Image (cartoon, rainbow, N blue to C red; front, side, top):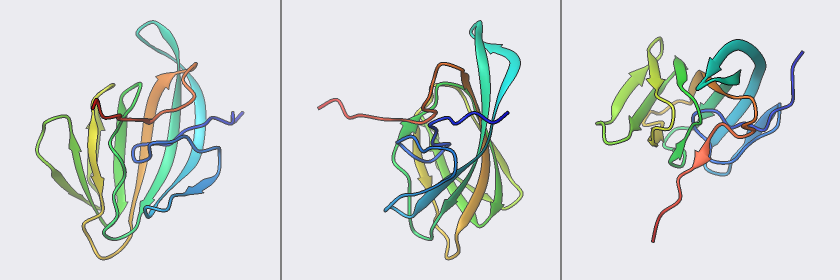
Length: 139
């Protein structure tokens, strides 16, 4: 059974309900599924949330963190990704990426001329209702 979960996937800072959510910055996230799984994260019951992210040409997401590890697959277009202090990676259709739990996903950008589409799966504790937490500045 699908459970409505406020979620954002790899590229948004605020949660979106099951369905499609469009942001003014050119990104949209569609929750495909939310499944309770038998594995645990740090001893806690776990959920796997799968999202489809679309980023329009020249657009980018805001820096954020995930409460669990994330895995992604680029369906179409190009995708620039940078986590923590690592250099920017340019990924193309057919390539995959991994984000460790809690890392800073500081760059999520479409540098191309066509929309980028990707599928991401984020594992997270069942009690976490947002899977992308915006990074706040400490000024």
